[in-house]
Length: 244
Ligand SMILES: [Fe+2]
Image (cartoon, rainbow, N blue to C red; front, side, top):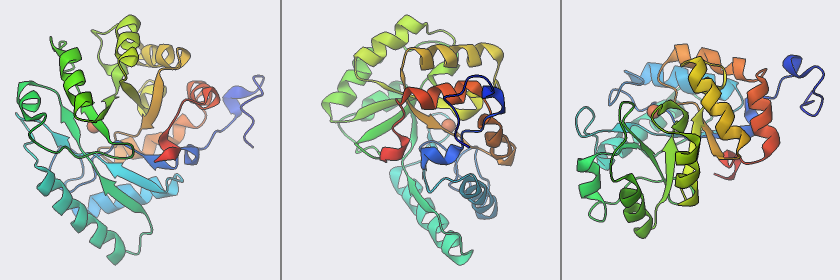
């Protein structure tokens, strides 16, 4: 029963994840980042996503100048191998690829010179340092927008140096926000869950992503379905996953 309008028994109510239809953040390309180490694990993770009701995943390997120097060609080659393996294993699931670009000086230098991998309405998924803010973020975002990209910031709730006002400023500059499903159930920390709640309350969340790296993550998504914060996010009608 989809009874999210009944507050009385809200904690008992399940809102299925299948309403998302498409996941936009995961690490399923085998052996190129800290996600699936091989094709067998990648297929298991995708089977799990399928069992949760997802129809499609746009998988987003890390692109990071220091740790994961993945080119677009590496990612697309890995995607083809994964798609072939899914066919071989008779897994009926649509898988596409983009990337999770780490914003730093090296990334900034590529803007305008390299065509980045995107999804949907030319969305580019970007992440930031978890430790300290980058000084010229607004300028980098503006440069990306001049190139026609719609910037989606991955897991904004995990950058503890940003306040709600910072997020409002970013949103007013056209940045979309993607929260992680596991933030909704307090997987990272109670502070991160609290920040997620604030972002939801201000209608700042456009996408929910699994950020799935491994089976431990995948086993936990089901818990979100009973989470009041998830119900609230769905009720607000800001999510765009289903449009992709
Ligand atoms: Fe990620």
